[in-house]
Length: 168
Image (cartoon, rainbow, N blue to C red; front, side, top):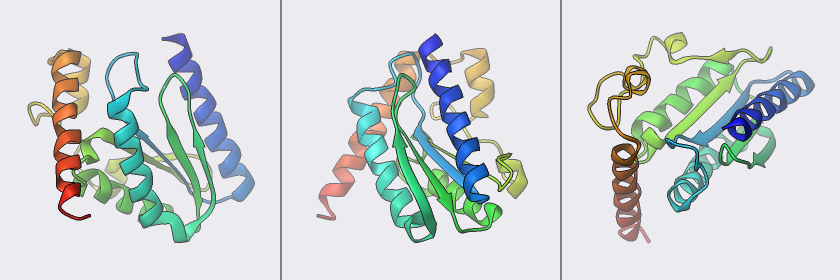
């Protein structure tokens, strides 16, 4: 668990360095996955879909891009020549519309390195993958087992892979 917390701190420090250097909004995308094992087949597939989507959506506005890895899983970081609120709107749209969007966590930091929450866009909190209630409340109350959440995520990834077969 300490290695996950250390990775999160290192990623945040990297975001602050990028923000300070470029004086631009910074996007950080990663996959949500419960439990201590953040690097596995499901997260790899979801991260590939995330990076493809982020690059297609934000690539033209990126002046810097890097991928980070560690005990907390993989993440993609970009400095963007975009207004931070516009970038956050685009990120939330991905989280809401992509088939795997519920597995994505796409944060946007403003030019000073401060994170923009969904509330900056007057958006409701994210919903639980299992029951549709507010996700943070389910997480805090541990309403669903890790196995139950992983099973739902596995179903999402399988559905995504099946949907891709029709577009190849």
